[in-house]
Length: 118
Length: 150
Ligand SMILES: [Zn+2]
Image 1: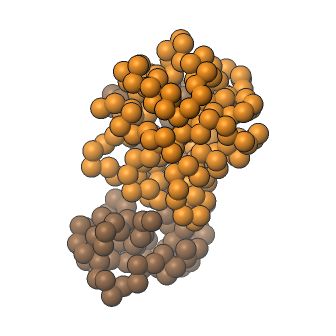
Image 2: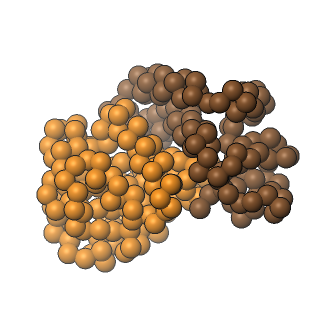
C-alpha cells in the first residue's frame, strides 16, 4: 500500500471514531463507551483530535492539498471501492484504473481518494 | 437480530497462545483472514482504541472494537486465552475472554452498535464467565449464544 494512502486511511478511521464519540444520542457509541467501557468521551475525542492533527502534518504537500479540498466539500476524504463502485458517490470506477492501493488514486466523479477493499 | 447470525466456527478460537495484550489482539485479528496490510492497519486502530481506555470490562472479559475501512462488513471473533492476560481491565483483573468487533465506517444495516450492545449485555450475565471457561468446542460457544437468546 502507498504509505500516504495508509496515513489517509488511518486518519479517516480516527475521524470516524472521533465523530461517533462526540455524537451523544441514545444507544450511540458515545453512550456505550461511557457506560460499558467507562471512557470519558470528551477526553477520548480530544486525544483523538491531537493524534489526527499529528498525522495530518505527515501528509505530503500535494496530498495534503487535495485532502483539504475534498474535506471542504465532503465529510470523508477516502472512499472505499467495493465491487468496482466508489462508495463516495456510488459511481463505477473505470476498470482501466488498476484496482490497487499501491498508488494514490482518486475518483473522477467525486474526487475522493480511493481505497480498494480486500 | 441475534449474535449467532454473526459468529461462525472459524472465528472462534479457544486456545489463544499469546501472553501479552498485543499478541492476543493480533491473534484475534488473524481469525478474520484479512490481507497482511489490512491486519496491520486494524491492529493500529484497535491499539488506538485501547489507548483511550481498556476494553476490558471486568470479570475476565474484554471487547476490543473499532470501525475501520479495511473491512467491508461487520466482523466478529471470539477468543479464549490459555492463561489470563493483563489487559488493564477496569477491575484490574486479568482477562481470558475476548470478543472482537470490527465494522466499516458506513454500514447500510447499522449493526455495529447493536452488536456491541448485545455482546456487552451477554457479558453482564452472572454465569457467562464460568460458562465461557467450560466451553470445549466452537459449536458449544454458538450453543451458549443461542441459549442466552442474545
Ligand atoms: Zn466517487
